[in-house]
Amino acid sequence: MLKAGTIKSCTSELNITTQTNDFSKVGGIVGMVGSDSATNAVVDACKNYGTIHGANTIGGIAAYNYGTIKNSTNFGDVQSEAMFYTSGQAEISCASIAGGIVGENFGTKTSGEVVGGIVKNCENTGVITAANTSGSQTPNSYAGGIVGETCLLYTSPSPRDGLLSR
Image 1 (cartoon, rainbow, N blue to C red):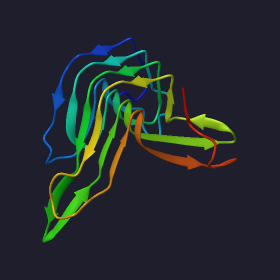
Image 2 (image 1 turned 135 degrees about the vertical axis):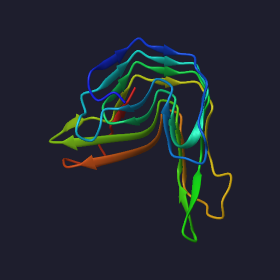
Image 3 (image 1 turned 120 degrees about the horizontal axis):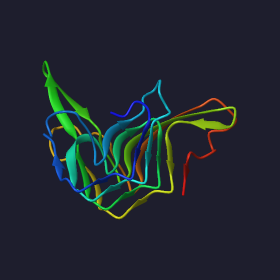
Image 4 (image 1 turned 30 degrees about the vertical axis):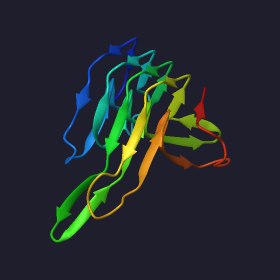
């Protein structure tokens, strides 16, 4: 987790596989960029060549982004599996989320200024898969070449103002 500061010009060639029966928050460079209370973390000019495979939220560069990811490229394949577990007699399912750059992107826009959740000038050439492969329930799957899922909080002026740019 990068809470603050910058990771710059970093390259990963690692293939990462996690257990698919546990929550995974895995990225090719870093698991999490920033946090909901720290949006000044930056990943800049990084590259991932490795294959990333796990359950729940997976990204070629980062699983979660509350900060800024820019000028970065993912060349590796990214695959997320839905996760299922039992609580008492109930089967609980968790979504499968996969993104070429970031799995889940979190941003806030106030008074026309975007704070965190910025993905800028990034590219993905890997194959992105979000799969539901087991369990009796069918949870949601989110897959995107750049971002798997975006969670935004807009305070003004309009929710139609985009946070992703190229």
